[in-house]
Image (tube, rainbow, N blue to C red):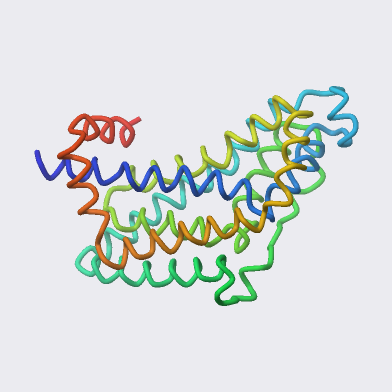
Amino acid sequence: MLGIELADAAFLPAAMVALLAGILSFLSPCVLPVVPPYLAYMTGVGVGGLRAGERSAVVPALFFILGLSTVFLLMGMAASAFGRVFLQWQEWLARGAGLVVIVMGLHFLRLIRIPFLDGEARIDAGDKGGSSLGAYLLGLAFAFGWTPCIGPQLGMILSLAATGAEAQRGAALLAVYALGLGIPFLLSAIFVNRAIGLMNRIKPHLKLIERIMGALLVVVGLALLTGAFPSFAYWLLETFPWLAALGLSLIHI
């Protein structure tokens, strides 16, 4: 029973990291500036028409989130399957992943430069603007094609997913990441004019957001490298026993 509770408690810090990573991914320089044009494209109107309320962007935004969530959930299950296959080397796998995540964090902190992480590999979803199907396809394209731009954040969550052997744990972690990325997108669709104004105020601070993401990557990388997540899980379980039940419910939703 204790082993099961520990595994569930260990999911919670990983889930909190996944949620924060999703939010920071939305605020990253390669995502935030293109949100208004994406919303306009999905609704089949220009940005001006979107701001004027000619068409609602809420339903297309939901299908967009569904599209990217589909890919992220499959990635999470694949990462868990990979961790299960190499279960006997999981400790070394976690340490290797930790080193990679730290290097990516140093890139975001501008301490080292990795040129391919500054690029984008966007995929054209085809001329489907203005339809729910087009929005779903655009979500699929976003999830596949925005790597390597959001690759470091996504790679960090996949590394956490690979440290668990259960497919539902990996899928749950990537679902939380998708929520962190998708909920701000949905809120932007609901409150278009306020969201665009807020985005314009955030843009001057994108470099700071990028550095915060880098710091998070380094911290998580060190946790993977040193095995700090299990220790943190023990502390959570002893300090907040109810978190074990919460972790179990999150995994099995």
